[in-house]
Amino acid sequence: MSIKIQVINPNTCIEMTHAIGEATQKVALQETEIIAVSPSHGPKSIEGHFDEAMSAVGILELVQQGKAQEVHGHVIACFGDPALHAAREVASAPVIGIAEAAFHAATLISTKFSIVTTLPRTKIIAEHLLHQYGFAGHCAQIRCIDLPVLALEYDKKTAYQKLLESCREAKAQDGIGSIVLGCGGMAEMAEQVSAVLDIPVIDGVRAAVKLIEALHGMGLKTSKWGDYDYPNQK
Ligand code: 2AL
Image (cartoon, rainbow, N blue to C red; front, side, top):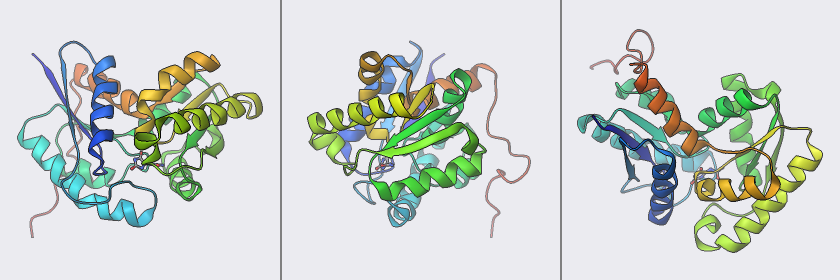
């Protein structure tokens, strides 16, 4: 029996959707089928509160589509975990955001981590999530490469160099045991940065896929008892 995992890239940059699909297929179980999708409408990249709000409807439509295809889990592959709680109301399978997946993974292998993300304006979104999920005490620093999200696809060389430099500084200065990458578009760079710097570097997209495989193996789905119950009929 195959495990179908819908990986939603919430922005409309199709190149990033393909890169995320490839990066996750590499670590997925042989029986796992990754369905990488992005909305047909919405922002091309998500770099602030407005972009997040504009992406929400597209994400929820895709979750509904995935549910109709009977997928075994959904990943929201944007580091602000946009529309996560709403998606859990709509879904019956597990729904995991990449920030929460990465925070969980990081604290299972280290006591402290730093986040390396894209633009400074996205830092507040990560900070809010750290507090909301209860991981604030484990995060030493939130660093930025100061490049827009789309540079990760269209100027890969510069993005990689800047990411490597920020991660190098985090390792040397932050008193940490691991690094969390703060953008879905960084997924394909995690392995190389980790190998070069000799420190665990966590890409939340892959962490989320592996967590869904684990939940599926335990027969666990999103609870419909309580606030994640299906939305009320009006
Ligand atoms: C992101 C992300 O993961 N995808 C996107 O479009 N924006 N988050 C970020 N901090 O840059």
